[in-house]
Amino acid sequence: MTDADSTANDAVDTAGAPVGSVAERLESRLADTLERRDAVAFVHVGFPRDPGLRYCQVALEELEDQPPAERNQLLTAVAFDGDDREWHAATATDASTHPARALASQLADRVASGTVLTPARLPHDAALYLEEAGFEPASTDVLERARAAKTPAERERIAAAQTAAGAGIRRAAALLADATVDDGHLVADGDAVTPARLRRVIDEGIVAAGAFPAGNTVVNPDPGHAPSSRDATVAAGGADAADEPLRPAEPIVLETVPRGLDGYHGGLVRTLVVDGDGGRERRAHVGATQSFRSAAAMLTADSESVTAVEADLEAEVRAFGFEDPDAVVTRVGGVGLEPRERPLAGGDEIEPGSVVRLESAVRVDGDRWLRIGDLLERGDPGERATYLAAPSRSLEPRALLEE
Image (cartoon, rainbow, N blue to C red):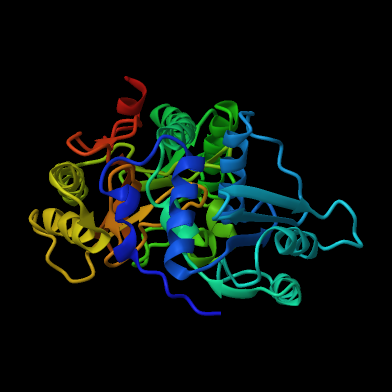
């Protein structure tokens, strides 16, 4: 298989706002790519947990005018015929019949043999069934490119997941707002406040708001250079670290990336300090919050690359006196059916309709960091880029409860 697609040919539906539905957007991209690559169809095979396959299923649900279906766990094959602009699907309801073989047979009856485009991660046996039916598989990243900008309905789903993220963070803030200090540690309702306890509280808030924590909630993430890490407990010194009581006047980082019922993710990071005494974390906080204002203005004015926005975030933070090379880390990436997806890195452009997760992390002292993360929606051309509704960025726990 070879990948000959180019993002230079994305102008068909990205010069303006994304089209109104996933089905319209995906079919437009697929038809254009099939014509450009002289291919007869697009094929994807996988389980519903695969985000690319789920995106195709969202398109099919829209075409059939039905609510999102409860996802089965069966291997599924889907195909889009570029000439007739029709979808075909086969599911492994019978263990003796591979869905890729059934789908390849359907395609062979409808289109001439030739090139079929597939994701690069197509299962090997599925590729063999396509070849057996007379087709030549070739890889494409058209699904990832189609998913980079979100339709209005997708943005609503992400916003719903972000609302659940905010509910979880506010529950943690409420616990910290009521915490007292006992022997140098934080205590609430007679029990020590630990990372594990805060994580449970956040997850309970997310579930109560109708979403899934999805194993993505972290308290005091890896203090290294990666702003996000699910391995915070191990990195901090082992499983017991999650049960160590937290201390006053030290930054407590709360990160969560919940998944909504329809599969779309949110993404939120807040840093809270109980009985803080100002100083370096206050200056870091001002720099981080200012960086978010600058990024919104930057993406309101024009399309920018991921690298350019990351550099702008960093420059704003460093302007507040954080000059050490390893004192500031910023990260920008898309969010949707995956916690991180296109636009993801480097020259990927943040185009109209994109929803991106922005993070600024500032080293406060030693291995302690202050981090803030939010979701920014780049609207239609001419519209102001705006952050999705979320709790206050204040360091004071009680401030998150006053909105």
